[in-house]
Image (tube, rainbow, N blue to C red):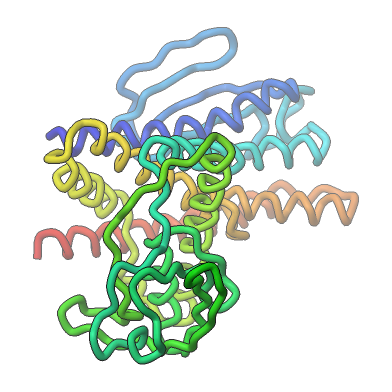
Length: 345
């Protein structure tokens, strides 16, 4: 039960932050907000303050900032669709932007609290690509191909997305920069391709500026991983069945809690904040995809409108978003079904 409560709190925190972005910028642009709600489905509890009704829905996934004239025509001068295109653009972009800022803040907090796990090799596996390329314990990996490495955990992620390539590894040894080409090899026990470098986490405490810098680097890593995951889906490297929806994420949150609780409350909190940062960064990218019904799809239509200097037909725009919404709901049902199958079967 505690796992489910934690998952609901994390989901709610991230979604509210997203919707508050829309809400506050809409208010700044003098747009009338009719409803602000968290969740989906029937209303559990609601109240009205000023001109806005605030609601808590039954299902703890999703939320909305419902503005006057957002999806239909309205004669109200404060309606969303009656505002200049640049204001509508800012209102819609504010949601993903808020998630980006939230993820960045959480990354900095986690790095400042836990420290920086530098990618310094502790040992090298025998007969691995790394050992054959001359990499030894004590080497600090600084770059894989053109991707700059700041944390030990970035190495395995990069290799996962480039397992069928020879990887140019740049590393420092005794203050000198060296390079080697390493071919990842498949590890039967771990079921994935590896370079063959092993780590023992040793966290370095940075100063304020280092914490800020490495927090931004962690955010970059999350954005990179999300984009690479999406491109892997498109190219077929990763199956759509490996995607996780709300059910799968609840399991991940529960597993994170179970694996962390033996190390104490602080460790649990930091791991959950780290996971929240990843989810918020993921939501930033996903929401900005140029797909109808998502914020990114709406932003594309605003750009088209600005170029044409003419509004799109509201009926046509509504149908575009409806098609996108139906497709997204279909995808969500498919992903949730896969999550349930993976957990219980």
